[in-house]
Length: 253
Ligand SMILES: [Zn+2]
Image 1: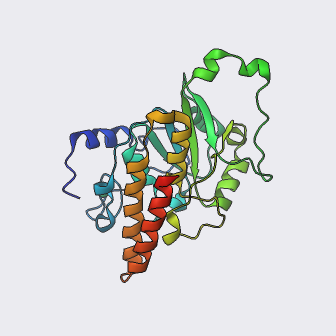
Image 2: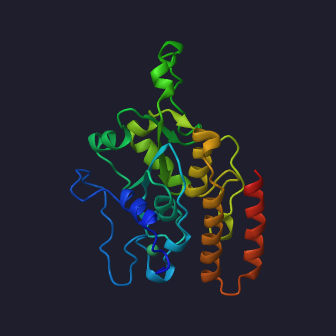
Image 3: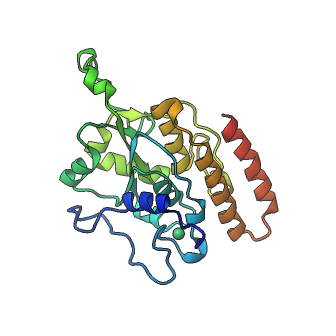
């Protein structure tokens, strides 16, 4: 990890820190107290530090990740790599948010907020704006602030249903979720369930268009998945092969 002495990366990391504890989200957890065994940048144990994998990736859409507290402690979680690779990615940990604090988090002047979440029967997307509302040229031209819930499927649904402000946001659904390379380390319950990093990268590709190139970050994520899998299964050469296959499919999609 000492090999990552890049000024640009440090600067990006500085911009994408957790909010300072002075914020008024009473139920939002601050970052864990750093210890000698914790990397101060990715906030993971030194032995699982992922800073060497960080892939600075240009993007126009802002990203806000609402991270369930249980995800923060997961060695398999992909959000630290996402946060450090995107200059405008804010991560807030919590599963219960006061309406006023959540409202302040979700909306930014000059940004059109959207929630990355499928339109599912258990949580239907709000009705599309009327033609008159949608006709405002300023509104349609605004860059997006994308809200992403980082939790298991069931917990993300619970967070959505518990917060009317989240449920009321216009949704962004992924066009056709790419095959995940996450399966080597985490059971995906549904075919279209991908890691938070992969889903966010795909959403940025939809929103930012051709200007966005997420392939290097997805490659870095593939190396992260392989590293996690090799730590949990020291003789995991078969997993490494399977991961290389998923790698090719995602890139070709
Ligand atoms: Zn680190």
